Amino acid sequence: MPESNGSKSLLRNSVNFPSFSDLPDENDVDLTYYDEGPRGFEPSQHWCFLGEIVDSYGLGRILLRVKDKDDQVVTIGLYTDDRGHALAPQIKQGHTVAVLYGEQHGFLDMSVGIRVEEPSIIKIIPCSLEQLLKASDDVAARKLNGQSRCCGSCGKKENTSDNTHLRWCSRCKQTSYCGEVCQRKAWVDGHKTDCKAFVWVQWFAARNWGVFNGYFNF
Image (cartoon, rainbow, N blue to C red; front, side, top):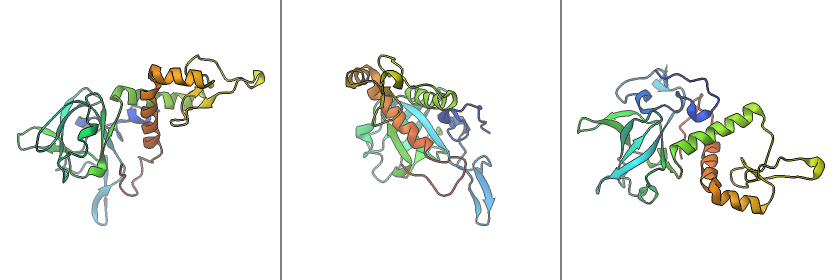
């Protein structure tokens, strides 16, 4: 049974964002994620598997090889109606795959991975897993420590007394800049990728993962 590591970083939560070894088995009822109700066992909370693409193959059906938070490499089989081909343009080594309600599945070749049948539960996030987790850590640290705002490029702190006003990145609203010159420089220096990670951290953070009131979809 997965346990939360106590971190305030949402994506480090090993219950709602488990590694592959902690995913429920499709043939068992995992009481971490299910409660018995009047209609049988139903989900009690949400979970999402995250893995970084290390390879992809398959002419008929696309199969992904991904590395999870524990560095375990597993296969994700795309059993959607189009056999995963709608995702093909987005599949790039180093990008992150998110699978809602993933379960351990036994394939015919006796390997164990994740089978995806619905396109609405899988998303490819255009940044590495490390970048996504770091963005989650940064958001948590700011909330916990109440860090003062400073320019994401030159490091200048906001100071209303000397009329130093910072403005947020309009997309991710997690990084501030003292002007357009610093913002353009930061974009080239790496915020272009970090921004995408922050946007997806916000998507995850906007949802209550601990209470189930219907399935999430991407």
